[in-house]
Amino acid sequence: MSNHPEIAKANWKLQHQADFALLDTPQEQIEFLKDLLLKNKENVIEAEKLPQFMPSDSQLSDQIKDEFAPHKPTDKEWKKRWDEVNKELVLPVIMNQESLSILRAEQELLIGKLKIARKRLEVLPTYETHEVQKIPSTSSEEKISPKIVESKHDDLDILLRNIAEKE
Image (cartoon, rainbow, N blue to C red; front, side):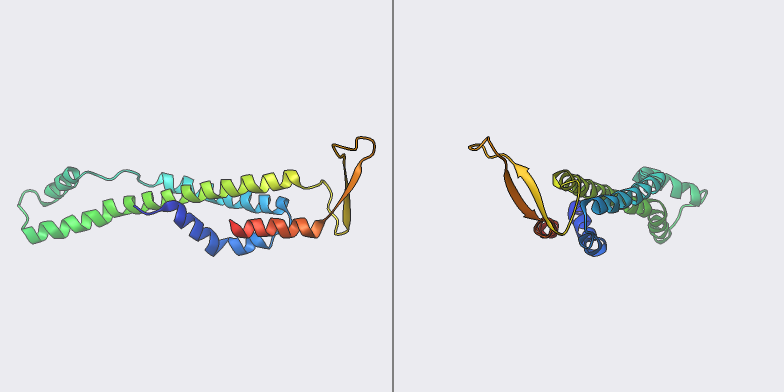
């Protein structure tokens, strides 16, 4: 069995990571991830409509016997039909199960990234400016007057981009 979370991460890197890195705000990232999750959900729904269970070997054998009745097939005929039936009935189910597992792993990856983006949105100030922002904070030692802590929007932006790149 494949390592589906690793496949999901590789798919993310190939298909979405560059676009995600270009987004400026956590809100844009959240919208981007929501769109991807909706597309993923649609794909999961479509995949779930396809056959999920493989017929057993005895069911396949019975089907082949019924097709050849009333005469008994040669070994060559039997093997040829066995391969055909497996291609028609078994292989599509295996491929669908594999695809569905990867889609679910991608869904988990996207949900994790969405949670991170939402946390980033919570820590940002409600306004953004490229100028210096002044955020009042009270020192534990000096309760009389608040200190002014200066932070630059650009520094926060660089920090968020570095975090996103490490993921």
